[in-house]
Image (cartoon, rainbow, N blue to C red; front, side):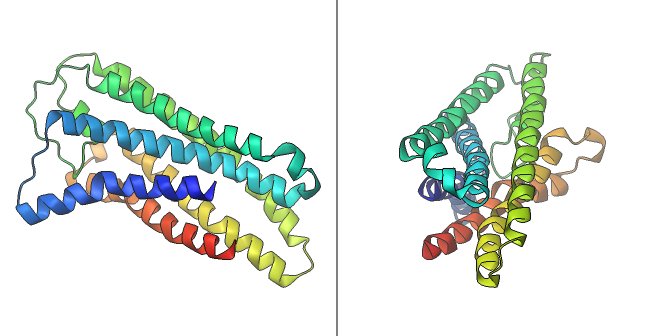
Length: 236
């Protein structure tokens, strides 16, 4: 799970940050239409797979800490491989749906995306038909599904923290908390900023606010999780 999460984190950062750096150095802010489509697909693919994997890891932590004697039965090597593959498959399907919906919409309000990467809400502002409502509906459904996964993650960690507080060893409690708390904090930041970015009313939208929120959900969590994953690898 940590290996998959590390790959997803590095991939998510690589989709947006290198392009922004190249644009800054060359003073060129353009991107090809195909490149924009690829950026949307890869971003949602990796982000969707990562969020699904974080949900799986919450269950993994719950079984490991709350039901350690049943871990081998519930989460054997084959089950872990299937769960990781399901996370990647979920991300792929999620990305295909969004890309197909977004780039089937005719765009007639210019070709300027007011963001440092091809963000779907900014692309939808360029649409000139009611077809964009399909993608809006899919985004709303995605936010509700994401929030449902977040509730599952929180409930899993509530059970984990209850079990951890009963551990007599202070070192054992510290190790358990250091494993769980960083991921919970990152998931909270990712969900809160992502939902706000995609569901906020247009009346409070502004270029500066959109930029800050986009950085908070697209750049900060992967960078922070990369360091967290490194620390967890050292513990393992």
